Length: 227
Image (cartoon, rainbow, N blue to C red):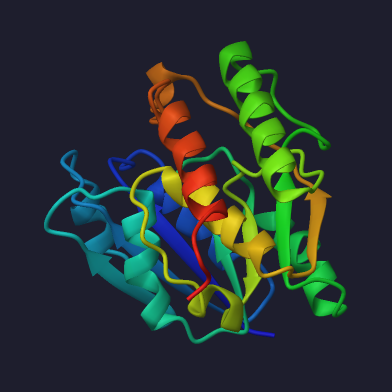
């Protein structure tokens, strides 16, 4: 199966080239769709200089957030399985084949890579607590038992993500896509992944105010009609 790797990027000039190299090292047929969300730190120049036949590039004129970046990439998808890859070094592309195994074996339509059931760097307690709270809310709303819906690593069959109208911006995407997946009663698996969490000095972007946005999107998605 061919993989489509969507890489939303905003101000990641220190890591973007390493991430792309790590993706290219994965032994699978793949395309890489890089979406620069109007970076201001010189990231765009790094992306423009990347040369590879399997890379597609999108450059936003205005910063819009992760959800918007993924929305821009979806029409360009040609692979059978889609994986979201952040442009930092928190997640490890050498785990792709492990992540997609339930889909390849026709046991799942969507796979979440959980940071909390695998090896991980001991990182910020406040983020851990926030994740626990939003996961509890999501599990109550959608009657499931996810451990980590805020994970970057989500893998989808192509037709699944192409069939969802993504309307959120920023990190509301994680809540919206999770809600849409469970509203459709798709087969969802979680697999353990390793995680090298970073702090704000290292470039982490999610803020405490995003907690309220995420909760809002969980409720908004739950109580709307499927189009």
